[in-house]
Length: 305
Image (cartoon, rainbow, N blue to C red; front, side, top):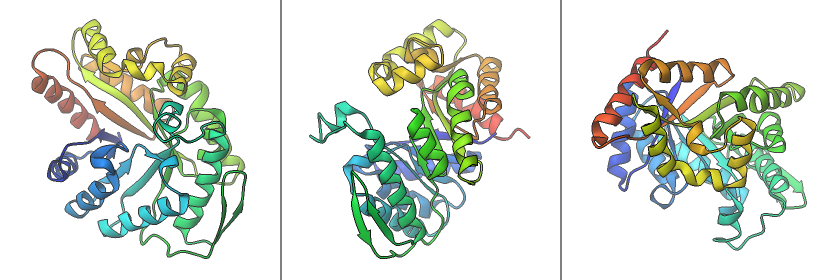
């Protein structure tokens, strides 16, 4: 099973250690949020040189924070700094409270913005000239220097238009708070249909969910609610929770004993996930023991045939 981990730390040194430890344990990827050290690309570039095979990706880099040509250039530079394949650019438009509240930008046409942005970034990373007269961007640039290694682009896509763009233009999606039911009924059929209609390869579906191995499911859900309850208040996540038949974000978390968690993760793969991104969280007073127990199961699953 292709399993990646969430990552993040207050220092570059610790992020390097996280990448080295995850690679040694056999995990296929490590995913860093946009806020890590102010910019995850610096951490990824350094950690990429300290490792050899593990994928290092953003989940996700905020589109509104930079012009698409700049994002493509930074992504190419990160791949060059890693000096090996393995960088994955996950990007998305974030949420209205951040874009309008913090940045003071309009979130009114988020779908249009994201589609034009993605087309520009993908073309620039391929080394193609960019000639776009869109409603959001007017970009006319000669062919840039292509990234020295392929940089897959994954879109943080949950809504129908976003999933179409993820399959038609990008290389897939990286999701958050989408459970098995949401994958089967909504995410996977839409993104696969878009890729097929565009003559694209089958897209990657990287499924991010909080994970904790713990015998008392109610206690685990209570801990999840404290840490992840905020996501259910955001419209994008509230919609995907509803599609999955859930009311609260804690209900999307993968919790239970070893057999239960393993079955839930395998069910995500059966529903169309190509990768699982496990955001482990502790339950109970002994936080280290809790994390170690979850990590042990995930390492076991990584090495399954």
